[in-house]
Image (cartoon, rainbow, N blue to C red; front, side):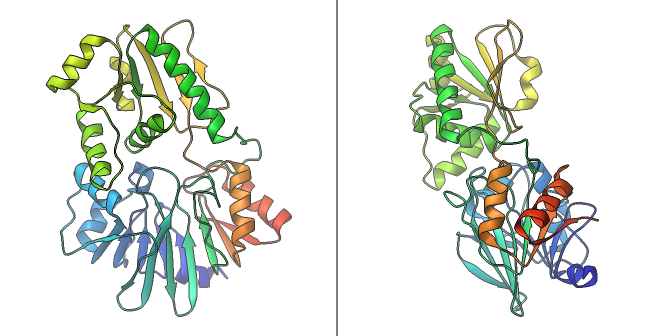
Length: 336
């Protein structure tokens, strides 16, 4: 079976998901003529420069491809293929490629490739299977992210987590400004979510967070009262002392003692944590499916074969074993 899988759906030791040996997803391999990018997080941009140089097409959602440009990845216009969810294109007149929505960060997508009657799907990073993330039903092969493939990773409902976060922010804003440190993509998702849950403090965005937000705005995802760091409007807001500032996680080391500071992490956390007696907090708002969410997706999808991404998850073997024992679905881990 491994020989057939190598020709149909494979994950290389460098993390490239290779479909029919011709379509690479979230990594690059020799022989791929098209590269699909599911979203802009670094572990899904592996060897992206090689793909831009050597592939005939670079495929992603409009938000993802525009965000790549902002991050400095220049994709030639004749190679750039921006797809809407559900839209199908033919690669090399043989491989039908489409994207489906994945709840993770803005622009995230699942990937479906069909060739000679065989359908292979890759979830990419996702959460909220069946409610927000569309479940791809009955593929011949499903490749799944299993970041939280261990049964102990079961979290509270999303609305409960965000309600607690909103309560914390309201308390901290009474005391002064709040700085939130988050990775690209997660920060933009958080901005949209804060407005949904009633946090109306003005937002001051670092230059790169601002550029990525403007991509969202271009496609109709608008956050009221968001301003570029250093602009006259932002400086006027600073004088009021009532605002939320977004910076990249890497800049946490430069945090000063004034105001409150929140590290917004995608790592699994069951509670909001205060670091010592200081003004630093850690809030875990994961963009990944927890264990129950993963099992629900696979049980609803019912693929003939499940491939668990072992490059991006340390719990891949445990999850594959659980699926074999409890859902009676053939499950293997790649890379071997």
